Length: 264
Length: 334
Image (spheres, chains in turn purple, blue):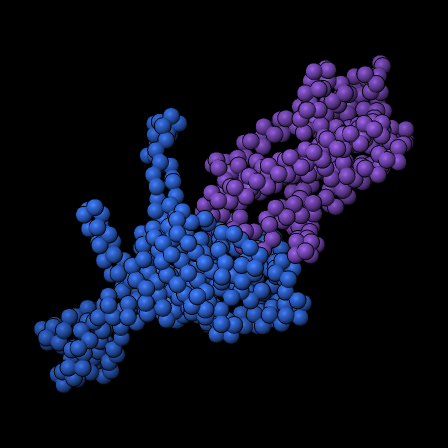
């Protein structure tokens, strides 16, 4: 109950902080423009004929939707945790009677409104360029889309928490983020839609959490999935959320026993 | 008992290597470790409402002990109980009753006004709105903060930030307050203000205080009892007065002279510690003090005199030197 009552205050503080760091946030948004850069490349590829069902307008929808979703699900908890463990500033969170993971989560979620404000014109552009033809026409798809986007955020968040918690065992866990990001760029559909992968790579990708963070929500809102496929993938996505959530919380809790609280 | 520690130990395993590139390369293949005994079997207890100074030289284990008492660190061995709870469990009922204020670290959000952190703490500690406004109003007035709480923290001076830290820490009226160097870096007048404020809080709410400080004025002004720790071990637990009496039983007698006199005359009175123009300072054993004062007044042209205990800084440095020598002897014997 206490946690529930505290969340709005944590969210409000996170929002105020996001506003204070709006310039940095804007720069971060520019670093996530890769889908927009790739769009003309794939457009050129599909100029003659559709590529495995991907026409030019489907590529447009895919990468614009990808950019919007990326704004909604960005995470940086691993950097924050790593820094706070090394400097001892984690102390201030540990002294409060609310689990630190709630404050990391609300800080991340609180930046979404600002990032969504930037994503909104892109969404309008998406509709203007592709009409409604490239968007899902299933009511179920739109009903579960918020859950799928939340699931995408949650996978990223728990992975970042687990990587951040590694800094309680090793001196610096931040390099592990690069490994995670490499996996994300290759397997999530961020650079190349998973559908275009060779069969074995596609199968491998879907066995990993990455496509559930990016490719799945895009496929869902661009109407690439049947209702049955969408529900199945949503189930798989939330199974990943559960697994990574358990791992992240356990690592963080176990790691606290080793916390040196140096400097702070 | 509000705070109890029994056989408390915290040992850290740290890697060690010499400086230089060769040592760096060598460390890649074989890393040397050593165990640092930051706290090594400390026991004490503190009653509700007590103000206790926790003293020791740098690296003595003071902050590590405080962190264990707050639940930030897990002890390697021993037991701790604070406000009826085991700190390491970090139960909400425990965290609601304690606070650690560190002079060099802050809980205020750097780019937001302190008022935002106060509001967050109100929600986190579930302080009702009326009590919150009353507490913040009182604290802001006592600490002369005025509109400063609405300026971004980064724009405040160190002293202003420290005062705001205290407000943030006390919004939920903690029953046990751990203060780690709360006046470090502050100017003298702010130090006095913060000291008065801490004493007032203790008296008003019956809060238990445990304070570490390198400023002996903080300790003298706030702590009737002191616990001294050195190299992780307890070397004294008792009243400050008794500590001074034990370590430095002599008193300081300062004489203000109207006329300069020869060194030989002065030496006849006792151990001469300091001599400046018109002023001489002697160190006199307690039992000879009355006789010495009387002789000085008879033989010298004294305009004024004062009798004081030795400065606390000197007492502490003598105590630390003695406890290190004892420890070295013990280690040799082992």
